[in-house]
Each structure stands twice: as C-alpha cells, then as structure tokens.
Length: 240
Image (cartoon, rainbow, N blue to C red; front, side, top):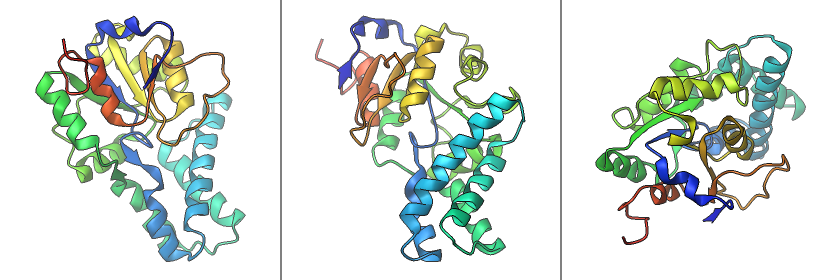
C-alpha cells in the first residue's frame, strides 16, 4: 500500500463508507450473462456499458437533468448494444439489467466487513445507486447485517463527485469528514471524496495510473483488506 505525504491524517478514522459499484461489487461480473447472450461480445459490452453509465450520470449532474441511476444504467446498456451492433431485445435487456441486482462481491469483502464488525467499526455504503438497487445487491451478497447506513445519492439531484453527494455520509454518521474513511476502487471517486475532506483509500485492483486531477487519495491499496490497516490492532495493522 502507498500513502500520500500525510498518512497521519488517518489516525482519527471512526467509520467507513464504501462505494458500491466496482468496490464492493464487481460491475464486470455481468460479463458471463452478456457473453451467453452475445457470444464474443460479453467483455466489450460490459466495459462500454459501464463507461456510458458513468458518463450519463455526469451529464445528468452537469446539465441539471435529473435521472435515476437505473435510468442511466439502462441508457448506457442500450447505447453499448447499439455501438456494438447487438440486437438487444426486451428479454435480453431485462436479464442484463437484473444482473445489477446480483453483482458478485469481490472475494475478500465478506471477511473484511466481518472484521470491521468485530472491531466495532461502523461500515456503510455511499453510492450513486438507487435505493432499491442497493438493497437488492446488498441482500444478494449477504451483507445486509454488515452495512449500515446504505446511502443513495437519490434526492440530491446530483451524482458523485458533487459535494452534495458526499455530504450525505457526514450527515448520516454525524462525524467530521476526516473521521470517515471513504473507500472506492474508482480513482475519480476517491479523489472527489478527498476534495470533500474524507480520509480516503483508493482500491487500485488493476494497477492503474493515478488520475491526473492534481490530488491523490490518502492511501492507495490493492484489496479491500487494506481498509483494516487504518484501525489499531486489526489483522493488517502493525503489531503495537
């Protein structure tokens, strides 16, 4: 794990907020269903779909044209299918959209969430996802008893990285931003949370370069297990 020049800023962390999509849940796990429906195109469809989904959330925020995350997700899927010249009928669309309720968690995540609970550290979600989407994927993964609160940006009229979305976390937890560890596998999200004032951890699973935005997360790791290094006496912390 790497750190910014001020790693001591993590000392006051009292709670954790996780991004959902890409961090707790693998957005590319829909590739198997996509490949079955469109042989030879599953991976490309998954990547383009995700890129357009995020692009549409940003356009929605910037233009003030409020759309739900589900709408942005569906629109991204439809664009991706057209771009790849795939015949996306209603049944295939419904199946792929339904796969968002059943995204697979990364292998280490359950153990990390259980460890946080044993340590008495409150852990929740702060996500672009609609409330019903988040409820479904959290329940499917078996994480419902390990995550509280589960916060959706719905109601702000904005998506990340608007400060109004990050403010939901501090309001719900009644903590200062620096007292909350915000964890995301999306570098732009981790940097947005850093700008807001959160202590941040970027889970860089794929060895990507830092986004060129003039800022860096508090720390960078490669697995959700790196969250535990922020808490004294955790299995990943140095021996006291």
